[in-house]
Length: 122
Length: 457
Image (cartoon, rainbow over all chains, first blue to last red; front, side, top):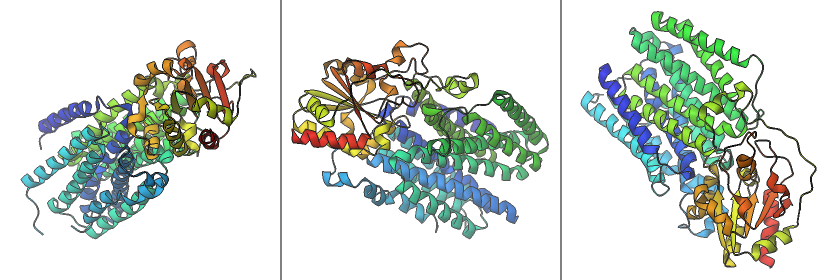
């Protein structure tokens, strides 16, 4: 893609980024930070491309390190954000769950992890 | 395997980018936030599948293995971490993302001849390395591996200037010649700059730095997208960079600070370092039973939770106390200061974890006028966010920070561990006022005793 189109896209993305979070309440500052944090884990796509084109074993080793780090950012970021947001549901769930916060965290975010597993066998 | 044609590839990346925008949009309201996050995760999955079917890749088993290792390490940690320790985990994930971007840029150097592409590589290397090292220091500070006070030494500003000048010089050499050795030097300089940037930031400002470094990593990812000619990386990185910048400013505004003041305050010897003198004036301390009587016969109670509550893991007991009082017909609200906890918005997460409905968590601007009609303000493990010095003492490090006006309530009860000043290290005049009662002890123990006494009324 030519430079001018990339510049256009970049500038428009800046405005979209400013716009979508400009009126967020302080209640959600932490999950929003964590969610944005997960999104930049998409550097995984770049790391995969570099690893897939590596011919030299050293280059491959460094690229694979980048893949591991990027995956940790992406998967970990979405899982921890989901865990946080799961708690913002008010009083809809029965009170019996109130006493086991740890267990709740473990069971449900599986929904986010499951799709990530599929990518391993495309 | 036949590869996907470029049109379909672009369309799928566009769909992934739209998912990320929807994710950020959804995250700005509690009702849509969780769905938003799932949409974001779906977008990420779509993008990763797309890259496998659209680019000719070697070493696929190795790559899949690395993905398994990365998920295998991160997912269990993310699931098990205590919500009180969540800020440092976010810092850690942010750092590894920045590190990944820097490594990708380093490896792309040998493929690039265009000086503009090399400029993007230099930017990614430097900013990614700053983010990696800075997040590492932030993690160490939040995890208690090192002091949370600002760390400064006499030559710090000069050293920072030298490192930055050297980085600019090395960057120019890389852009002109593309030498790998100089690029490695640049990486090291970036790591050094990241450490020097975060060391002098202290105390309550540390979480805001996470947000700033988050924006940095976003920008590094956007620049790496320019290097690889990948539109999705450009859009996603720019989105995070822009939203992270706004979020950083919003958080800083909630503390009455400027971002520049936080980053460079300590260079001038300011930041959040204050006096740590503890005066010997008398205070009125009381028993759990007396506090229970105060609460149990009030009509309106506002609970002000702070980090002390979170460290003591007392949020569940606080929630129980609130419902015990409510069952006596008392109106109970939680007043949340924007920077209560260890991170802006952190207390909301901790109380939501304890099943306090987010409707009863009142933001500062909504509840401040209600303290006048409140019988008891119960301050649990908070100090700086209710300190009137922020309004009255112009020399105070927290001067200008908006506070919760608990002094307006008829009675103020502090549950505190000791008379030690809070995070900002300044004394709270409110503790010596006649309407103030103190109950010393661990926040959870005190709450449990008060809860028992309220139930016995």
